Amino acid sequence: MDQRVDAHAYAQRIGEEVGVSGWITITQAMIDTFADLTFDHQFIHVDAERAATEGPFGGTIVHGFLTLSLLTRMAREAEPSIQGAGMLINYGFDKVRFLHVVPTGGRVRGRVELVSADERKSGEFTFCHRITVEIEGLDRPALVADWLTRLYVNG
Image 1: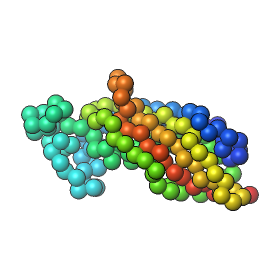
Image 2: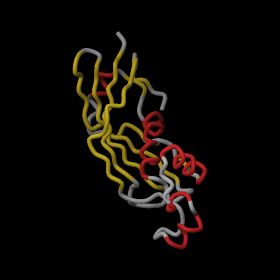
Image 3: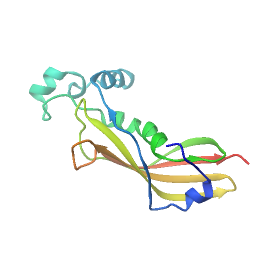
């Protein structure tokens, strides 16, 4: 999203959906790379043949934490740019729930709602965004997360 907004005006949008990201297709190559980086090689993620015969989902599925890590891209696409934004820091999560598996090859996107905004001191905002990760073709989301970020506005 390339609209630019004032931080104070944005902070008034509590309870509003502020944007929706584009769809992201999660490939087996992405899953395998994530497995290598995190040392999580559970067969349900990386062994298509075994996952199809021994797993409950008919094939490999995406790591929940891989889906969670895509929130950065989703938020960047969905949230408006703040005028004068300097540094943005990941401040953590109040809540994360994994609600449905994402099949390999599935497409996901994030719906972003502004839950809270607090200007701790002049130019220093703490935002909480609720990001609901939808799975294309399914009614139940992959995950819902309340994500805290700290924004420092220049000048």
